[in-house]
Length: 310
Image (cartoon, rainbow, N blue to C red; front, side):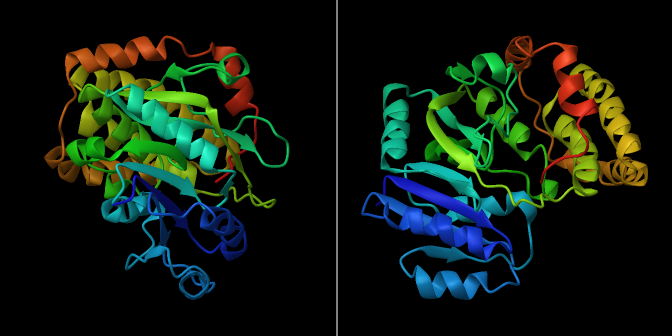
């Protein structure tokens, strides 16, 4: 039985995947297994992995599941600790894995560890979703209420208790949904710079409609699935105007409108999945969010930055 399972999600990026798998091939041992989730690639990824890395477990869902395709790999992972990374995340080595194991060993209430992610080309911190200013806190460890889905480690028994990402989300906010459930079960999520990986973005990063649609739709579903009535209203009042402004700014308003319509259309399905977190968890989330930087930080980062990397 392996101690660690490394789950890699990939879709039509065989070249960068090859670089990552070469790195991970040196880590495989009786205590480390690698699971590759091929999200229905059409570039020969499946054949490449089977031929070049036969020791790895290959999972191929019947359709592209988006970011929540990780669920298929996490479900078959046998390790006590499950590490999930994207196909363009590099630098996970034996030292990093040892540090991850040590962090879980000393704190039985640690449910997940988020890694520091730096841009492969600039060396700057990227993929930051935590409720603190990266300019000040990127070099420090702290408790967070977010999950960097493509660079994180979980205690497997925690996933067994709270479940995985919601399949319906496809992409966006699936990490916040899982984080709320982990915290509600009494576990902590921590960010640490002791484990640092690099994100090798494609140079032609793909802006498009997906974030504008899925961010908006899943804001509704995240709130309905997890929050109490007052916090549903507070969440949507805070989030929907922001996504509306971004959509108008970048010419994707019709996708914002469609997202709102689809969110409401499928509201009965989300209501069936509704499991509100406790008042204590709501209080903890609010306390963690009080550490968020001021309005100026977000204006500079989002309003005046054109579009998004996906």
